[in-house]
Length: 69
Image 1 (cartoon, rainbow, N blue to C red):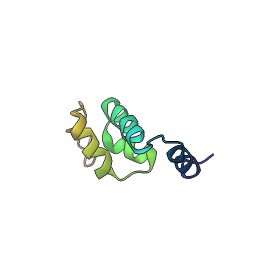
Image 2 (cartoon, rainbow, N blue to C red):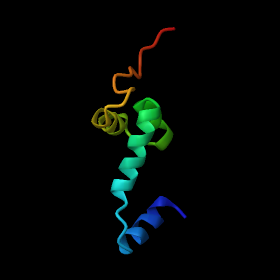
Image 3 (tube, rainbow, N blue to C red):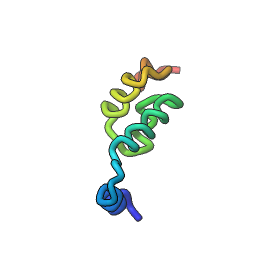
Image 4 (cartoon, rainbow, N blue to C red):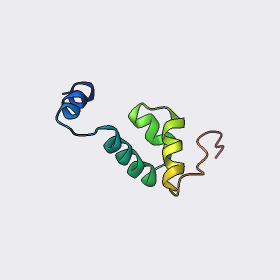
């Protein structure tokens, strides 16, 4: 079952889906840089970066581009 099919069913039963999704992303951005999580989930970097800043995670100042090793 896809998320698009599951979310309406859960909402119909009274389960809020957005807070759970945000909480899951918040936990992920505490473990890895927000841009990496965004690319894994197919989200915009801005969305996960904002969640990371709100969570105050260790990756909140991660520079996603321009690394020259």
